[in-house]
Amino acid sequence: MVRDLKKIFIDLQKLCKALQLTSKYLFTSMQASADKKLDVSFLPAPGTTLTLQYPDQTFPVPDRGRYKLHNEIEDCIVCNKCARVCPVDCIEIEGIPAPEVIGVTSNGMKKRIHAAKFDIDMAKCCFCGLCTTVCPTACLTMTSTYDFSVFDVLEHKVSFAHMSEAAIADAKQTFSTSAAIHSIKQ
Ligand code: SF4
Ligand code: SF4
Image (cartoon, rainbow, N blue to C red):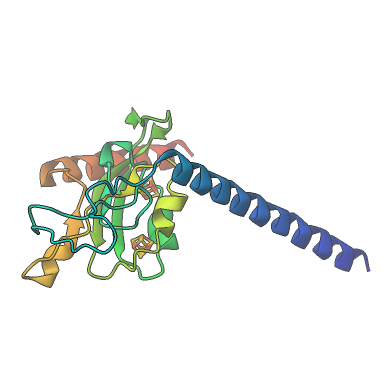
């Protein structure tokens, strides 16, 4: 009986959290739509024909649209949350822990892991946007780039990390040395 009540209480807590999150996103999205009206002034009057000189002219896209992803890697803390939430496993990350803080993100979070690899395969991405929602530093965003056709599908794999081979080897060496020192101390 007590166990059942406890379970009901936990479920209710989860439900409240979920409703809180949903209302938060509903409110911010309504606010954003009200604040930022899409500029469609170029559209002709109803009943007339519109010809866009593509690719020199393109349709404007909504601010909250889901298009090509971008990672502002300087603000990435390599927490792996985006890769874990991705339903199609199109984010590949390799992080190398550092023995000390290696920087601070724009929103004040400490960086403790080097981003040796951060690839997103846009050919597999289903544009669900979940990765951008969980990112704690808001460095992973959907850009307004919707036309990124390529001749070779492999070109859809975008790399955001920019560590050199030497820097990666250096970071790995530093990590293994500090791990060895740590285990000797214990
Ligand atoms: S938008 Fe969705 S499918 Fe694309 S990388 Fe993010 S989580 Fe994965
Ligand atoms: S969730 Fe954000 S901070 Fe974490 S690894 Fe992905 S892009 Fe980087």
